[in-house]
Image (cartoon, rainbow over all chains, first blue to last red; front, side, top):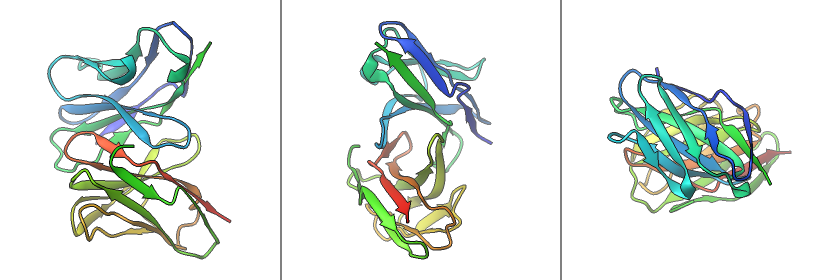
Length: 115
Length: 110
């Protein structure tokens, strides 16, 4: 069975500091991994994905994530946080071997960037 | 929010009434999904459809129904059997990769 864990409900960072939002996953086979961001009363926006290849994936708005197979992690990172990065972030996983196209989402991490 | 539209943005319903939420996509995606989001919680899958005229129950399908008569449309009906329907409903579509989401419909039961 597939599952995703986001161990932190909230992450607080000062503007200009680096940020990390943690994600670990469990799938039977190899994973497709995704990060999404949600602003209040809006749908989810796609940030980045890992399919195959380079373990460091770069995405929208200066975000990046590193796939670590041995630790089954896919942490989201940004070198310098902006106040406008404050939002709800979701990690998601899909098993490559699965014929179904559905994705499993984590419970979300609220990122708060203070000026 | 890409090429996926949801309507209405806000919806109010009296107890005991059925209500239908609209979801349309112009991305030519085969798969479409409905999720429910409650305050402080993640997304829970209600129904999904991988192809026209076919759909599968997700994790919380009780009290909901869907249809997929056209590739671009996947309406969700919240029936009176749904005991706690007040929530934010999100529609999404995909090929085999990432999902693209609509702007959501906030349903409130009065």
